[in-house]
Length: 541
Image 1 (cartoon, one colour):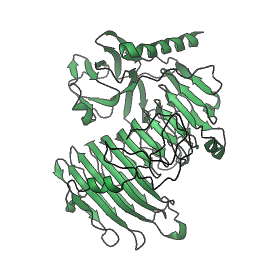
Image 2 (cartoon, helix red, strand yellow; image 1 turned 120 degrees about the horizontal axis):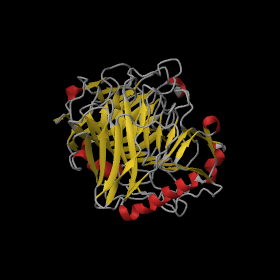
Image 3 (cartoon, rainbow, N blue to C red; image 1 turned 180 degrees about the vertical axis):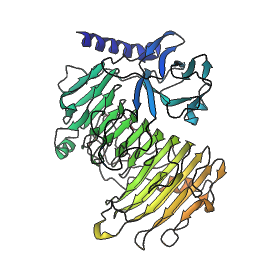
């Protein structure tokens, strides 16, 4: 009865969101650990401030790891986070009042800088810092310059009604509270929805109990959604898995939830196409704890990633990442274009991305940049666009595009493939990278080249990128083009988004959607026809 009452109250708060523009989630209770650093209340001009639970995850208390190199170098870092829903169409501000418990605040800085430039300055008064949020977005507050213990604020859009029903046999439902499912595994089947309500803290991982091929052939996909927290703390960190969400099926949707303490990938789709990640948040500490893996026509947007391996793996033709905020720890890359792929990929886009911080401070091993290709596989990779990228606190290096054999590669025929036509456009960092040559390009052989890399309007610490900042092996890699505005016509004429199938009411057709607003035209050369029903609404470029 108590759980049903809490679920009812949660539903009421969501309904309230359309009128009062704010819904605060219930406290999870149980053995969920609250932040030792912060208490938070949330309110608007028309509503009284309401306490909001502040979650906490820490390197010092992370789960065990397997033997090997999966132990982070540093152990004194943590992250607190708070989440709530707000009306995305509201013209008012939500006030987040942060009471500091571990230190007296003197300064407060919002990240990413792109958001900080729009939002009011934080107000510091006594033991309290007040931050005002204008719309759904992910921001982090660093108080007194203490980057080891940020508070991240996840303002989510109101959920679409009706919410998944507990009585629906195709819904696996977790209401507010702390949950420990049997064996720590949530098995989900084709066509089912896993729903974690706001205030739900679930210690488990998610696995597909259906056959992957059969799941894909139905076109129904799998949905994992809500505003709750999925926690992998009870599983040992292991480079060989399991992942926190392991659903190898076409049409996977992950929407709105926060995943923490993953033992490996946060979302592993097994390379299947049409994965969609929206308004998701991921935080983990061990090496090999990657963020989101996208296959062909995958989409990650309006999400936050703070992990200690690659944040985004864009491994399928037509994949798009946009409006993603990244806090990259010392291992891995913000975007990995290839880790030894053996199947040809093309027309992949990452745009309007903010990197709050990169904690890599030296050259340890490859790759060691923010945007990376470590390609020892046999695939031919071409036509990548990295556009509107901002780096607030840069680390060691910016870009690394390598074709080279390595211990993880197994190329078909024994020869690595090639990389061509990679554009970095409107890319800027607020400070200088630590590496004297923060851009590194390397080919390997006559059939294993890197060609056609372009840097269009790229600046580091306010200064345009120059050729002497680029380390390049010119025997098997061509000298990159440096320009200012030279790629707009090229991309506009030939670039294929291949993101043509995101309609909620009917099966896809072969006709591509064309975006006039972005200046990037879909010409449909990659996908002859689309056969899977999508359930995320019309995709707007």
